Length: 374
Image 1 (cartoon, helix red, strand yellow):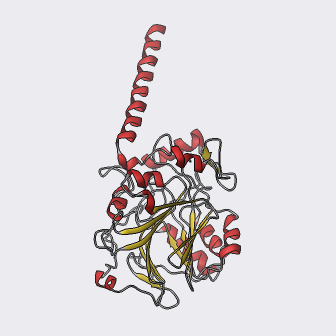
Image 2 (tube, helix red, strand yellow; image 1 turned 90 degrees about the vertical axis):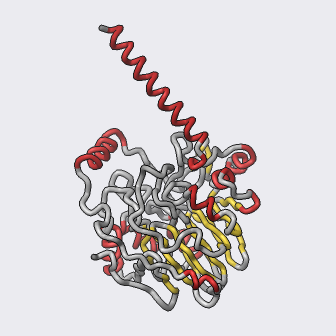
Image 3 (cartoon, rainbow, N blue to C red; image 1 turned 30 degrees about the vertical axis):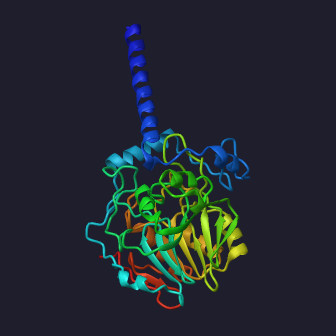
């Protein structure tokens, strides 16, 4: 009997080992997983004050361990307690972008166009920027499995004009997409990314000369604009063994007149006040408000915290993002924006809620329709 039990344990252990080896081999051979940070890039990363003990760390203590009970609760909720309305049950209205508008560069007003989730096209001071241009169908390394996009895109990557710069907050699949970067590589002038993320881009064919990697509080001048990498409270990783190996960041975009803050992904922390003191006030803040859960309260904000973070940043106009495109948490798909708009109204915070693809023209056209209410 004991020999039988021991043999079963050995077999299970061997199967587990094979699964781990197969998974690691798949990651090495599949480019969509990105690249391992090494060589001179790793030596540069080691000089960062935010990198020690072999990984990056958040600016404040951040516990991300949900524990055994948390995993059981997560599995149970996924299998037996699925929230109502996690996906829209009707075709979402999408404002299709007329590509003829790209024939002329917008240099008289700042125009911000939401592509869904956290992806943006920003036209400022005659330059075109893309933020976290995840424009794939699934937030996943695979085309056949993983969270699927709710609606069509307002414009395809192929139909986008030349992009002056792409800014990427971190390397999670719902923010950094292999296929999108491949298509954008030739039509993009430069890529600004957090430390280490350049390794992924280089593996995907982006020339090293077109990549600038930045640590928190570093600034870069770009054709009359200033980009500042600012702290966020999150994590990184695309596989089983690269968690916290690349940095995650928020972005400040400073134009000749307008100031924009882009949160990337972040839990609430006092860093928003620091950023507001250094770079605010902001004409608009693009703030994550979705994909939260009580099991991971430190790495994603609750919608009410989103509004408070906007206030901390000295923002003038708030736009909730990181919702309306994928199901990545257990709440209903409309809950984030409903809670954010309710709190904003309570605190008298101006808020804009455009359709996917509908332009927000700063100081002029600010959509506020509650379009998600069918």
